[in-house]
Image 1 (cartoon, rainbow, N blue to C red):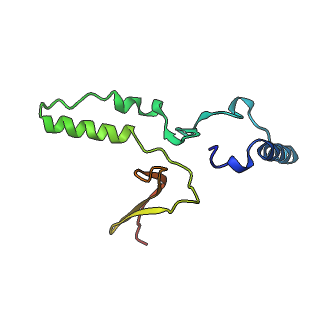
Image 2: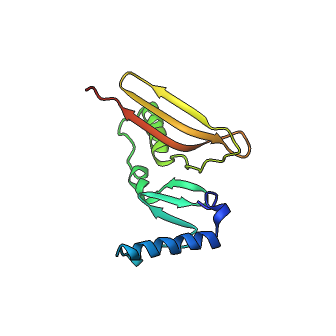
Length: 142
């Protein structure tokens, strides 16, 4: 998140927060102090961990998947597939904020009844593609 607000950090951001609090008072809205956090390096929000690195999956949310027992069949292929699915479900990519200095990459999959895409950019090394945003939609008939 720091990357997003890098240009307006500290003074301008504090003024912005002051303006928000003034508007809340104007409309007689109240904040729950136990749910407010300022100047946090990392925070859990809606099942995700938001930090300077980006938006990651909350490790507490994937504990049940990590603790799943392996299949009872003794086939090596079943175990490998099970481990692979477990890995994908518990290691979602970190979402990063877009960088205006780098080109965007759109990976698109369109089928008869749904569409999915990932918007991304290469990292600083230009070797690894990083996700910015995901979307999938199922088409409905009218």
